[in-house]
Image (tube, rainbow, N blue to C red; front, side, top):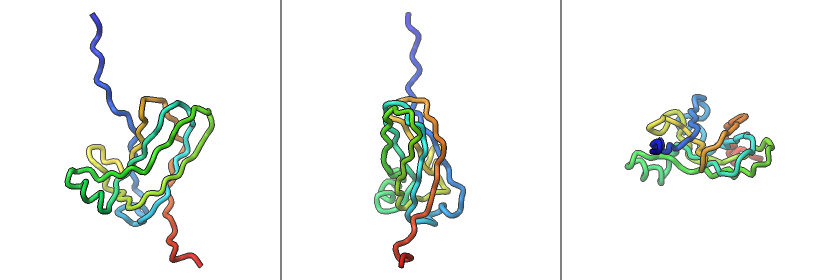
Length: 129
């Protein structure tokens, strides 16, 4: 007789943003940098709560997330950083059911070490000389 296997769950890291410089659409374009230990042989998907036409369509289905991109781990053992540009981020309210403003989801389970997550508003090109 074999023991019943528990149902597979989707592991992810959920993040909430509380800084008013980045909430409620205060910055239309953001750079989000993740500093991590490159260990494992999978990918990590970054999704965030967004506004805009495609998010408005999804909102009818209660899903306003937008995919920012992926980090491909190479198992180098090095500390790496990757920056994503987020357009129309709508931080501060979060996406149901976890109320996360952005999530990092591995394609398969792994022990992930994150050293830092940094947000910076992208400067408008109108302000450049």
